[in-house]
Amino acid sequence: MSSISVLKGIYGKNGDTLTAYPKNLMVVPEATGLSNGYLKPVDGVEYLATTPGKCRGTVNWNGVLYAVYGSKLCSVTAAGAVTVIGDVGNENVPASLTYSFDRLAIVSDGDLYYLVGTSFAKVTDADVGTPLGGIWVDGFFMLHDGTYLIVSDLADPASFNPLKYASAESDPDPIKCLFKIKNEPYAVGRYSIEVFQNIGGNLFPFQRVNGGQIMKGTIGRATACVFLDNIAMLGGGKNEAPSIWLCTGTDTAKIATREIDRILAGYTEALLETAVVEQRGTNGHQLLYVHLPDMTLMYDMWGSSILNAPCWSVLYNGTSYPMRFPTWCYDKWICAHNSIGKIGYLTGDVLTAWGQEIPFEFNTIYGVAADLNAYTLNEVELAGTIGEFTYGTRPTITMQYSDDGEVWSRDFTISAPATAQRGRRIAWRRLGRVYQRRVLKFKWVSDFRFSPAILSVQVNALE
Image 1 (cartoon, rainbow, N blue to C red):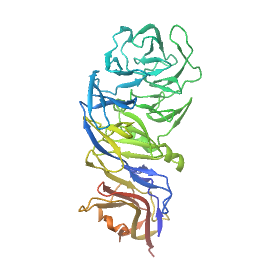
Image 2: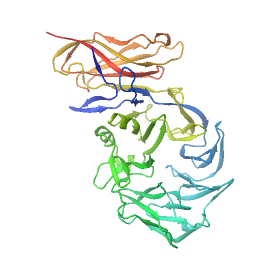
Image 3: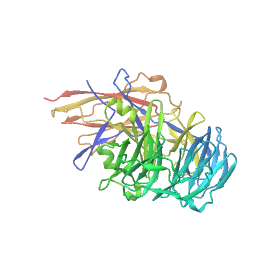
Image 4: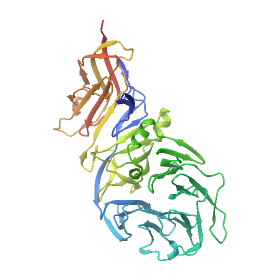
């Protein structure tokens, strides 16, 4: 009997061996007695409320959830009551929400709006231009229009002075988004990032930090986020294919693997520009989500640091993982549906998303006959932690095998252990001859709560 890790697998394509990341399962680097890590189902989503439109951005301000749904700025209570505050237009891209001590600023559809108490109004100063996003820093609201930066007056946040404009001048690439890290503004362009510091003065009070430039940028207006005091982004430098980077100070580190780059290469840059990158820290995991048109790539910084290997997962449910804009508010992670006007909250108590089943899948690495001899595969046993499932259901788990990672066998489906049968083995027997090597694939759906930890195989050598 030998053991094979379940944390990462492989598959084949056109004669190449590629990495297969678990689907809708995340790596947990904890010792189980069976292995040093296991695969855990990602959180499900419980429905909370219907909204006036698709979510375009959220923020927790003074303990209250505010969000832009379609063209409406709304507040949401802990019970899910949605109150429309006002209209902010809709350009079908994520809106920017930031706040100061006394006001919430919303940049949407090329305009700036302020919410102060119960007073909501559009900023009518013509010098505000056509903003695309903004931050609040050192008492100023700083906005960008893709080319220039502008700050509000300290005494009157609704007033903008045309003499208080600046630009990211070290590279002519367009500005995509603004972030504040350790109270310093970061202007993220398509191919570079510039850092500014407050030097005061009567004109634009921020000056570019010489030597603080980062020669990587992001593709779209929502393809970067602040991740553990760093900037995580989908993009790259000039004459580079898009990838996923982590920018720390003036240093950059590529966190995308060969397989992640291969996935990204399957999209045009126009499609990647519509992606959304966001983060969530929960239960010790520091998660980065890269929402692509038909899947989500999830990176776990904590798991990667513990295992000293990149921990990626692929999340999907049908055609696209239906979760966007996770925001910690009311002691839970409030989130929105990716395509329709619904909000809910993330929870490990359910394994469904908005009531729909979630499919789980993982591959193993090559094993069984790595010494190139021929064997008979007598038994394959999958071990891990089994949870409860609904009484009266008959969940199943399916195994397939392949000798090259590309052409797969038929499905071998068995009944999953019932709640009262947690000691029953999950095993497949008499799986024929193995020549050289074999990779295995396992699939089930969310009516079976299972966290696999290790795969054991039993073979006999052929004379």
